[in-house]
Image 1 (cartoon, rainbow, N blue to C red):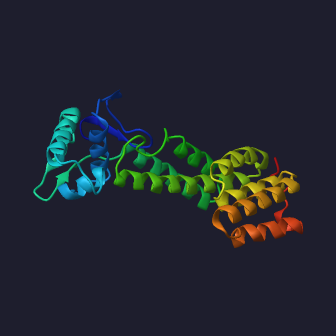
Image 2 (cartoon, rainbow, N blue to C red):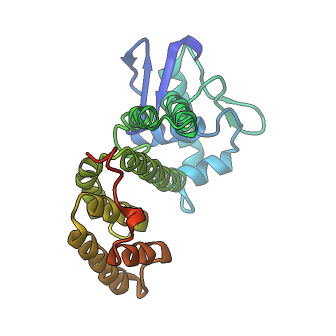
Length: 256
């Protein structure tokens, strides 16, 4: 981007020029910068910016604070893309969130390879995309807007993880999947897609009893915490494992 300024949000916000990290100010100033970056070149009104960073109870001198932080961002980024007032709002033009854009490109390669049946290549692209994460999205920055974005990106990250692990299973790397899926299910015990993948990986690794035990543990947890049963896909897989459905058996040509 302009003047070689690079912005990253896949973890704590990072701003650099020519490989040298720039000091982007105190936490609230960094939050203002992150919110403006996420507008992707659209102006943001003063009121919307305040709501995004402080929520419903901003401090009494919030106008002065916004002006102070915007001025601080200008000093940190100059020469380069800096926020300006357009009459309708604050605008940070000619700036992009570089690691998000690069991750998007890597995932596009992964999808293209998957659609073409090149599963190993698709998995490699997806792994490269996920390796770009340095922590939580905009980690450490507060405010309602960034908290919502953090939740949204955590969900998107899980969806990509599930797709990547499903691709690894399709390539016959069952034993490899088991260990990672166990870690992920421990971190997200109510995420039924991860449980489904773990049960399948265990079954195809010759551990049908562990697959059934995983289901029972999940059923007890869902009942205790949500007052319901697991969803139909998980129940269906459980029944297929019980009757040892031949379609679930690993492909001998792929089994690891």
